[in-house]
Image (cartoon, rainbow, N blue to C red; front, side):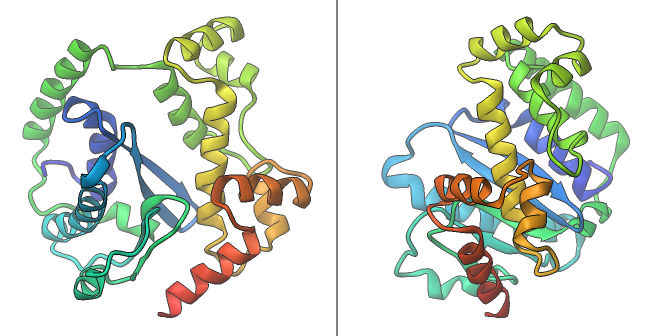
Length: 253
């Protein structure tokens, strides 16, 4: 609430979410003129899954509207079957709601990130960040290797792919061996993190009708469209072309 812009507020939410829950995590992605907030399930949510995911993403959009005083454009995707009651709530998401998608996420214009918050307060923000950082430190979640790698992948993405493992280690001031060990301590590895980033970026890029599938493949690091298609099917259960077609139908709806 005290952040200057939507983008700053989102950065705070992503960084400090572990101080409030270990059941879900938030990831932010921006590619060109499209941005997304991804909700990841860290533990099985059981019977509460549908309620938690749908209410969280719909609520997040309406919180943004309350904090900016602006109508929030964008769509909500859910990686779960469509509930029978959803028709009563579709109007709550201006860009539409789609189910049986590869990920839970809000997708919206990147320009939204620059919108100012009506309750911005730099002093309150500094105090809140300091308190949240202390809580994060106590949890031992601050500055984790995986979080630092994800952040670097977002910051230094380039056309033609992402930084390599060796490049990432150098950028973080670590040896490749040390980075691999620290990621292993967090039960992950560089390949898994890279796969995650490629997947999320591809999902965003394919929403643009101006980019060919070949161009999307290149931008996420695949020189061969066939390899990209196989990877995308593994990520989402469908082909890039089919996903794009469904996304365009969702926009028109």
